[in-house]
Image (cartoon, rainbow, N blue to C red):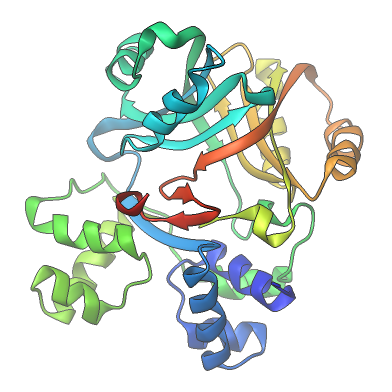
Length: 330
């Protein structure tokens, strides 16, 4: 149903979420109208959502990764309740339905136990848990982990898309009460044009542009691209937990971040001090990755693999009847 052009458009949006359809079409080699039509179809079908959100460093915010082992009868209700909390990001049921993995946004000033107590419903259903701080994420411009080992845009196309995009500088700007309508509109559609954002905020188009620029420049506003990989033919999703020596931590994290199969790589505070979300077409593709590129990395002392059985939430979007939807609609 979805072809290489759709995948090129998605790859382009992961590199530059608010790039204009005209610019993306120029780089891919198709018309602006074609890009717009394909994008709108992907969004309408619930395969793709671009969302705007507060940057992780605003208000001292950090992310924790929780692994929860629940009673079999409680796994679904606990995971579903977590997925509906705005502080909770990615939620999946893994390891044959016996484990929940989720990301919790909170303050570094709170201990992990306090974070979990505030967020978890029906604590008596939890048999075992670990909560670790995400210390550092490894990412590279143009990385397309959702492709399962295939990059649809060339390095030159990625360079053209990301050229001139400055890294965030200075302390983050704390969003004000006046910014709430702006963030609400961007949470619904991270590609909303300035005219729509002006309507939502009551501001002029020039003021919208200035505020977006200020928030983006300090990392106070970031954009995520939620994708249903399985609808694009990448059925297998796994979290690989790696134990590496500290002198090798950054090197291995950087190398993993360059692997097309790795959609997300981060250093954590736990026993397994590196985690990678790996996306592949099927089980043989996962084996080729584990026994190939991953096996060639020197310095890995131990590992564990959690295979996703069911995903309930991407970074922001709920997954409802096989579609990505705004949390209010789930």
